[in-house]
Length: 358
Image 1 (cartoon, rainbow, N blue to C red):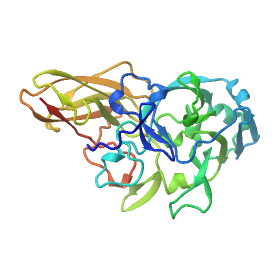
Image 2 (image 1 turned 90 degrees about the vertical axis):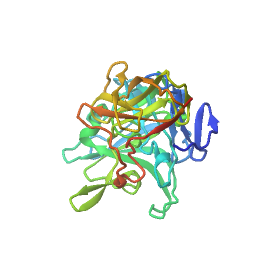
Image 3 (image 1 turned 120 degrees about the horizontal axis):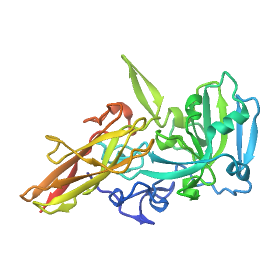
Image 4 (image 1 turned 45 degrees about the vertical axis):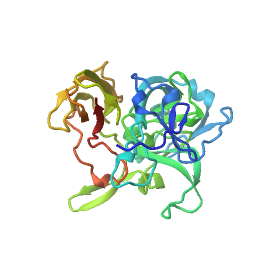
């Protein structure tokens, strides 16, 4: 697996400065909750500078009672605190062959934090959703011009939609991350959290919630963050949504040296979009045989599961290949090969790690 830039900012790998994209070095994984300072950062445009006292959130569209709320009103509503794993839809893009465009994430565009906020359903109930409504558009304050020739002229705001049914199911309007106010790079003052979905749906710097009775066909819903889904002989572009099942090895990391004829702890984490991780298996012979790893902690909805495996290394020096694969409560297991219809997103095929035995 190739190694790219090791330029660091606050302990994170700098993938780009403008827009700011920072990755957690995945070998530093050491607990269920990712510290905020280590959590990956994904932006598409400059980070908005928002005055909390002037910030407003509008709820409009196919509703009986459109309204606007401010920060103080929002945080005084009924709140919840839940742990949720967020993964960038392009995580592991650096390992695709042949090389593709996009942020060259390795393993660390993923993390788990505790998010505190107001259930979206509370605001929808207050607005009174009309019977014909079908989708909810979440719009952020981040905006800018795109270089894509297929994009519209002028500036574009970052926005995504989710179904009304999904919007009413445990979507959070979060104002705290790991018990402190959201940092600017993570969506201050308020961001959406859509558990179980790729983080592109968890809109940061949230400023508008639009209920609509038509499918949303915005740029980041159709031309970007979409994949080809086949129906018989035809294929259609479908917005990326649910996270795919995946296991990642944190240590040993790619190229690491381990002692021969020794017990070495292999550890990492695994997650799935809708369900629970039931099994993680490790192969130390390039997939010829598999052994079950030990799952750590308890299973929590919409979060990753840490795991570990005691590997008896070979007696002789040389290279060894480690692979992790996960199985979830719905019987899904990671695929061996990459699905080319997914483009540069939803990367969850098995990923070998090569280590040096000495």
